[in-house]
Length: 442
Image (tube, rainbow, N blue to C red):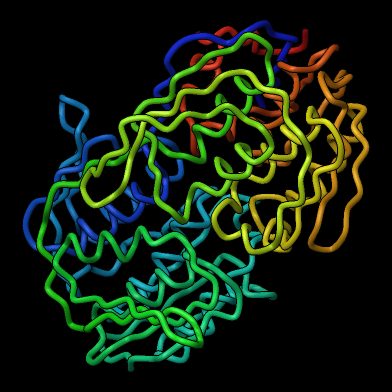
């Protein structure tokens, strides 16, 4: 365990180049391992979650190597040609790895055992297992559809047309990935749009995929038995990671921070839209395309924020950013109401409960429901002074370190080690901008 202390900070200044996008990094490794030929990936996030995916793809027979220049080289085996792993696939804390790999494993004639750390083994897998079972995959799990999980795959799955019961890019991706080695057309219908990194990247690797809006939702259809071909992937900076220095810069008076090369996928920028509606001074510069993904540079200046209502329709585009939005709401003027947050209860922790409890400990009034959270802002700094139990959740830990930076008494985190799962170098980056985050008790 690594206790971290965030002391009150002054203005943040400078450029902050955050790590590569986690979602895109996972998908690049998986599809590169399924492609024929060589795939080169630049900007790959080298956090623990993504490295768990890299290790799993190696175990399944792909060659995955880091080059001297920091790029990654992948030699894939081809769709349907992954080998049976010789040992258990330990995916650490990575729910994305577990869910997306489930689709790949289910569509290969092999048996694999998947496990993870204590946090991942508490997270339900049923929403992914259900459609994959309908395709013909076999799964054995602990009670409640939890890891460890044995996957008995087949190269004779049947295609499905599946309507997502709740918005989930992970479930959508798992079904599409299973469809790669399935004869016929596999379709997913989503009534609420979710991040489309899988669709963009599948096309980049040569898959035949269509996206058709309709009266009942958007239908994504993949033509099966695809032949993927290796390609070059440039991973943009992760907007979910950029959210932490971004919010800190908005809340600390006198701050001006530039965040270069941030991914601006329309299904990932809900937080930026919400913060601008709250009065945040965020300028989007040099909007451009990089390997099929929109990217831009963000210039962030300190601002007075005003509480607003964030409707449930926004949740899919910013589900990972609600913890740091709650911090922004704590310093805003008035009430911020966030709706449609049920998904937060089955993340690395029950993020809804942990944020509400932690904010209250820091002197911020909250109201919590089954799928909503209201934060009553202070209109400035918060009291702080609490020791937060982050519950092995990287986003909870980083959010409260930002809160400590804007507080009167600082904030301590019981264990900051999970931060490396998504944002290696977080403490150094924040301190280089002007934060005061240290190891151990103050």
